[in-house]
Length: 565
Image (cartoon, rainbow, N blue to C red; front, side):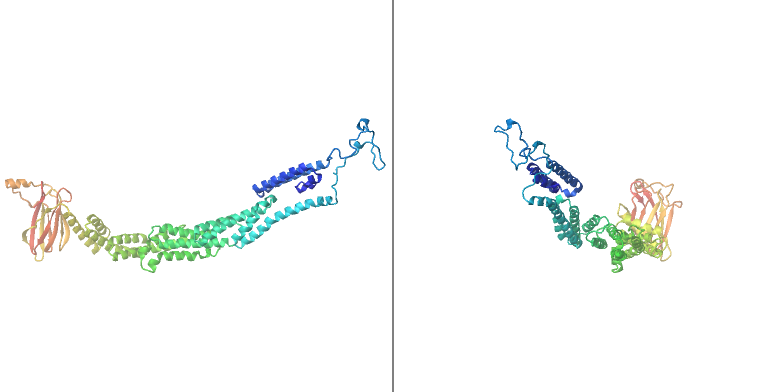
């Protein structure tokens, strides 16, 4: 049973040196494998192997103990009474010598011959206890170091804990199959994760810190980790991260990413509530969302710069989920404020003489107001009239005739009532005159005086001797446009016939279409054109109309030069 010690003590006692050497070789091999292969990771497998090896040693030792060590141990074992074995005669028998009738028949004892000295029995008794005590000590070292490591870990001293964890997993103790090895390795990795998270937190690398704390907490699967403040630090880091996103959103108007930035900040705030419910940080979310809105609209509410907050309000109004009291509440506030802010921005642009930009603002304010703010919608429409006129005038002065015409026509068509629409109609005439003069035109002479007119007035009769309708545009003391319908039976005049043959064809008989204009006297810019035929060059000129005079002229289309008079 001495072989239960695992070190071959039974073979030492039996002096079975070959077996003892074999035991030591196997023991060394097992220890080497246990150290290099991390036996503590597989205690059942290695424990079974140890047990099998002990059983083998005990069984072999038991068999060896029941077999004589030497066949000639008895001095009489090989003696024979045959004469040929004793050439000098049979041995004599002395009185003090035991005599056996058949020495070979004497029974063998299962106990080996005791070693000399009284100490032999002592070490046999204590050998298993010495080995067991040594094994117990070797197992206690990792467990003791693990306890110290856990205490340091719980105090937040991971650098100190790492030293104890390292000593708990020394390779020399692998053969003990102590459960402390697995716990120490797990604690070591947890400390590494925690130290990285805390370092990232100190360096304001919020995403790395949050990821680290989440990983640290996840390693304990909902149970309390050794360092009890991990949850607290994770919540605080999330709040700092959300605050940083909020500052970026409120201050990043020039980046064009307001919607994404505000949504990211809101998502980060809401994550605090879902990840750390009931925490002090979660209790601050109402205030944080109010601060987020205030920061986004401060340029308007505090600095009277409404244009700077439009992107912020649009982003805030689109926060999701809309059903959440926090994001939904701030989104509703933004929806209510956006029409007023947009209208105020239009007023700023109008004051800065950026009339066409103001048109866009007032249009948007009217659209946004809708049923949310009827008062703001009415104010936007009123301001839109003036902005449209100013925008059209701005295009006209820049020779942007098509843009001017589009803007002014919208004013006349959408808001026909009021003096602004009348002024827009007059300006449209100026636009058409200027555009006509910017192209190819023929010269238009003044009309021929024909008769008298009431004092302070002028009459101008215009007769159409052409197969095309004729439009007259005039701008001066009075501005307007008039159209004379086409002469159905008329054809284009051939000026060559007039010049060569002296042909005098009457123009302006009573059955020709005509119109008479009653105007104030003065200078007029005039364009006469055929709107239905772009191939006919318009006539352009300036008329100086005298008070109390009636004028008359007949207009026709020549086959080579366009309008003639």
